[in-house]
Image 1 (tube, one colour):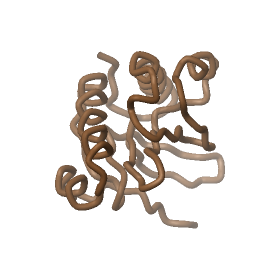
Image 2 (cartoon, one colour):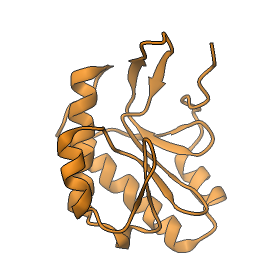
Image 3 (cartoon, rainbow, N blue to C red):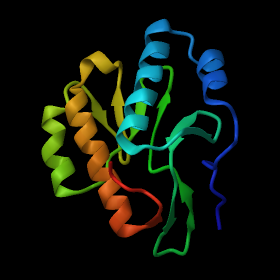
Image 4 (cartoon, helix red, strand yellow):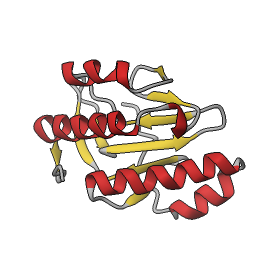
Length: 145
């Protein structure tokens, strides 16, 4: 069975931002995302793997037997775009997406260039929906504030 690459690393979040993010706007947006997500979920940011800033954690188990831990919400300030790990495949989330703003969708994440391109209230609603979904379907200590 494959091993999970994205695990809690214990690395310092601000050290990561200061050493990895070389664009000042992306750095400012990263800090703002940390503030927002922390406010919305009440959980501290922690590094998962080398480049993902995650909040909280939950245990998942697939039908295949593969299981592990993952952050409840997270993002990565990648070179090309931010990868936002805040989407759960629910009807409500799908209804919210048209109001998010300028983004691209991957299988499990949302890609944005900068925070100014999106509607922050819609991002907040997507995050709340994800927290609710994870709380209902997985073992976690998440509680919506």
